Length: 223
Length: 223
DNA sequence: ACCGTCAACTTGACGGCGTCAACCTGTGTT
DNA sequence: AACACAGGTTGACGCCGTCAAGTTGACGGT
Image (cartoon, rainbow over all chains, first blue to last red; front, side, top):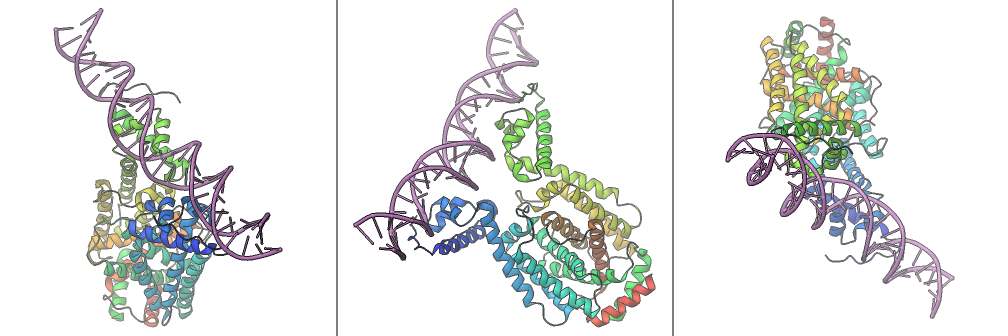
């Protein structure tokens, strides 16, 4: 293991960055969080194990720091999709979200399926959520959705998160061949469902027969 | 730590059962999977640590055995809700699913958010999924849903799973006060969304303005 | 009544993990 | 040239999963 040339005073942050990169790489290569060992990270960085503690309070802090980067990237992705017609933008955001999650399964799992280690929402996560609320708000303004944008956004988020996380965590379920199409179906189900639900009275499900007939008529008119 | 009275030959399965119960209790009390130590399980059972290996190949096998019990209970719960009008039964199943998950957060996390350790779907999980497919099939027969029941069921499952898992794994999100109402909203969003989506042509989202007007008209007629 | 047998369990150890207290070592300042 | 201190290293502790080897005690056969 080649030793790292010692940093000069004031350059402490360099090692912090190297450690973060090493941790992220390890996570991706091994494909599981259990492989993210402080010893492995230190070895890969060319540094002794306890040196990690100079820059991160403990292992959880390191993992969390890796997570923060992912939140940033996810937020950027969502913002990129937020232009144009709000309802279509909502669909693009959902698809981008799922694509991102499936493209970074390990990070997504660490990010969203770990027991919460710290209290409160990390700022990067809050920003990410804020972008989604913004898109939903635009939908409310155009009238396609109705209700509190934050609650609506949480519902939509939970739908796309369900699709992504189930695909990641339960690969042995009898998934259809075309996963993209399935993800698409989930996203649209959430969007249409939210739009329809916005207009129905709470706590009353119309009789299946009536609803089916009305939906048929609607579908015929729309197409 | 009081020692357990030694089992008589042929009674080996007794210890297996005791270990399983101890593991489940530990999981619930500690509230996190990390507390599920072979040493802790053995101590609680009043037995030496390696004795666990007499009945479980390794720690993963123990955890998986605990999971199987949960699958069984979840399946039973879903079957209980499957009577009566299919579309309403679907809603009851979704609500029961989320209630169950929120009532057993640790087990649900272990069950659904762990990296898959073994290949293939455990039989209990397949049975559980089968019950959901049956309810969806009934919905297809009555005409409220359309399409392949298995794919529809996966979409609905992913929606309720998203709601449950997000609530469990991200308690610091800005959730509304009334979680039951939120879960309800997610379930109905999935049901209505599926029903509506069944009837719309693939890969074409109607313009937001048109869809909004049609939904308004529909809502007025249904209420 | 004794005895060998074998399932059921224990002992003791190994290597790897996160973490910490104590020590070293170069670099920039005076 | 002496010093101070940021930026590391060494060595150890206790806990973890796991395993090879030894122990114990109920039971069937004589």
